[in-house]
Image (tube, rainbow, N blue to C red):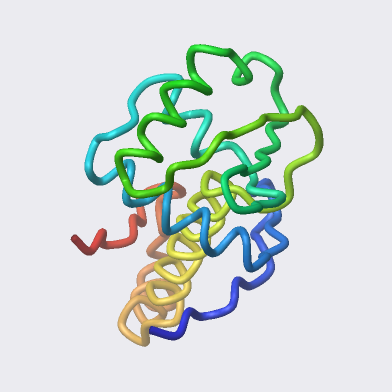
Length: 148
């Protein structure tokens, strides 16, 4: 499955600098979240961390907030990864993050929102209603359709 490259993030959305490790981490975290193998703070640690390196048996994650770097959360994430077939030790460092599942999710949601707004604004019927009757689009009223 070929993934569409991430486009420029709309204003106010964290930018993403995609990496091969980020692709792998996104898929891994998505599986953990879908299976509900991680919850609460452990889920946030997984979503907001960037996989910066992985060797056989050890992965290095980076988070921006020290509050996510708790021993109990790291151990629960390690256990969830092991249960998913990744028997590794993890280390977490605090620093700048440029490619995390949370950033990718936020950017994808913002791009879906932007596309939904463009579809409505470019619709000939909507344009005619605006022109002929002074119709207005209520800010915040356009929502993208969520596919499940």
